Length: 206
Image (tube, rainbow, N blue to C red):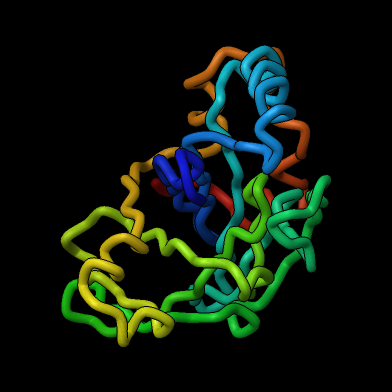
C-alpha cells in the first residue's frame, strides 16, 4: 500500500442477511513502473478510473450474527504481493479462520476480523501472506472506533505507529452505486453477485 495505493473509501450496504463491503483504493499500481504506465492507460479507458474497486460480503447466520465472509472473485488464496498475475479466486470463509484484533466500538469491546490485502491488485485473504514485508494497517476514520494498535506495533514508538495506520472514510452504498460514479466501458471483469448470494443476503435495509 505504499505510494498512492491505499484505501480511499469504503462503502457499506446492509441487507437482511449481511453486509456488502465495497473498497475503493486510490490506485492499482503494478510492481514494474514501466508496465504500470500502460496498465493505467488501459484501466482509464476500460473502467473510466485509476481507482481500484473490490467487493466482499459479510454473511449472518440464522441468529443474525456475522459468521462468514464471501469473496466473489476477490480472494487471493496463497498469492503474495509480488505475484506477476495474481489470481482472482472466490471463497466463503468462516470468521474463525481470520486473524482478528481487539477494539472498542463506543463502550463495547469486541474482536474484529482482519481482512488482509495480500497482492498488488488488492486481492483479499484471511491471513498475512507477506510476513517478510512491512505492513500498513487501515482503519475507518471515526471517533466511534478507538484507534487500534496491532500486536506487531505494540512496542513501537508513537511516530512509528502513526505512520503505519492508514485512515479511510466510510459511507453507505452498494457496488452498483459505486460503479455509477465512474464512466468506463465496463465496471468489472468479475461477477460480484451470484443467485445464491443474492438469496442469502435478502432485501436491502440500509
